[in-house]
Image 1: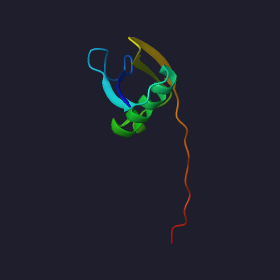
Image 2 (image 1 turned 135 degrees about the horizontal axis):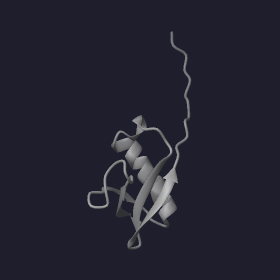
Image 3 (image 1 turned 90 degrees about the vertical axis):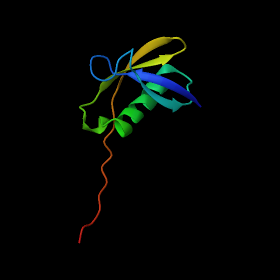
Length: 79
């Protein structure tokens, strides 16, 4: 597992002040999905309107990918 960096261009963070997260990095697309999970779970990303663009630093350069999220409702009986 390695530490990677990301930001949301024109929205959150920056190339000079990126967010960091730990992941297994095989390609920039997978890292963008992991970055989206980190942003959603740890930086109030659940409040944002998706899809969002993520710039992830991988193999010496920034890669930009648009990431969307799925809504998975859960249902339960009350009372």
